[in-house]
Length: 310
Image (cartoon, rainbow, N blue to C red; front, side, top):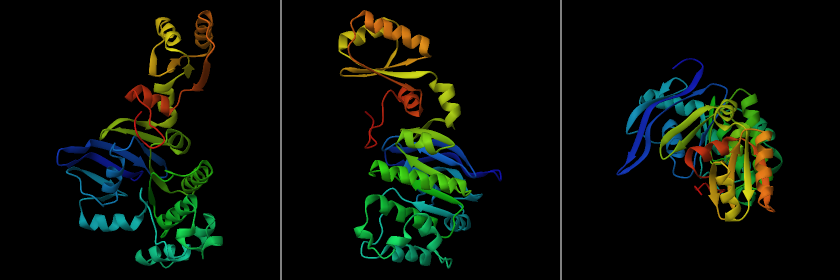
């Protein structure tokens, strides 16, 4: 582990009975970056994060967080002092106010610094006297982030921080995460939202069935494995058959809908000409290649809004 690395995971395996939750996982997170663990429900993202938070013990393998071993009792103590955590199923005490909940965490962490600056940055100071139970989903997530940031941790784990939030609350949470990075924090983010990972992350790792399927910088991966454009065609099965017969590889197909990868606009013109020659009157949507299209080509499936493969 070098001084530039916040997290090193070395061949971590976690087995529950007959279930292999993590299978020989290795990865590295650099200091000062946002690193996203991407994958569907049950892929092993939360299990890995909980091992790094010293909440679970791996069956085999080793990991270091800010230079401290997760297998060393002294290291575990130190890790818990330097990290902040927003768990996937975050909740606070309903009958305490926003300020009381955050102060409670500060007390548990033996933090004596003023929590007001954190609350002001997250827009919570104005609602500090409001009961947690009376907050919207987005405001509750802000409270969770504030509680994770108490004590000015060097490394912050955010496990599915925007699940269940409306679009506006999700965008606000993205802004907070960007601010964490600008402030020099290292952020490990787990998510099943491809757009979220693409907008926020420096680097990502795709986890599928407990294994790392792909890891790298967002720009690098899109350039290397994405390329060109992803064309979604909505038409009847006969028209989609004509596309396939025309030499275009259909990556994903469901009733009346298919996706095709093309290299550039010249190829797009050829595809459109082919469709028109067969009397096409459906719908075409063209998007640049993205993390979502890379995942689709790797796994052959999308991740739904609820985090399941479809």
